[in-house]
Length: 272
Image 1 (cartoon, one colour):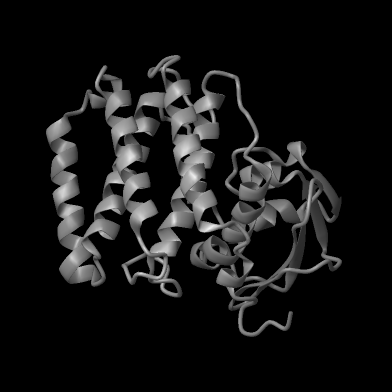
Image 2 (image 1 turned 120 degrees about the horizontal axis):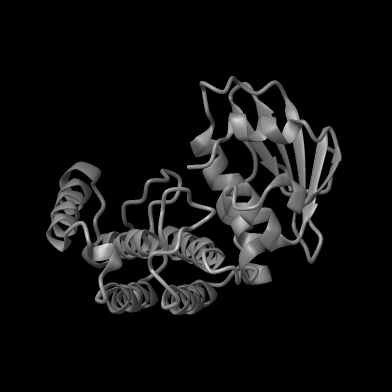
């Protein structure tokens, strides 16, 4: 496919169906809650400083916020989203500092997940709503984003108890695509220095999925293609998406070429 600007249209890379996203949120949130039953006070190795309880609360609060954005049809950041944000901050204060260790936390999380699924399932993917990503101001963005948010945090929760399961293949391939085409341009770090044309070839070893990313002075250019890069990063789709979110170290994947460039990747495009 011929690409223009900074690369290919991120929306054209979506290969997962809307219903798959909805089912993924339902499934992954259920697995997340089940893992949390093993202990809320356990530290989450992939999220330093966080306990399972804090992660469950954070994810549930994200569900609440996104649910309200979609349910109310919020479009304008200043008029619609900012008041929602203020209301949600007040709700969090009212729950108190100990809510992350409360016996009410997991039932509350399950309820918030169910409500999110209900709202996203009923929504038209093309319905205009506010998102933090300017090119896609519609509900489909949140259907995709919440599926990946939940999958990664499910893995985080399981990692606290030493029993992680990989992210389902089709969802993981789409997660790599989202990380490269949506998040990478948003997270480009000016303090880390501008790109000098470094090329990174990401290759899924368990199915279709290849991307060539060139970090130019004005940002990343992403192409969905097989091409030689300065460094090749190979692994299962699940391992690649977890690597891109710095859940797995470089030793967990296969690299070919200039492996030192992997450090450069996270200097240029740091995780959130």
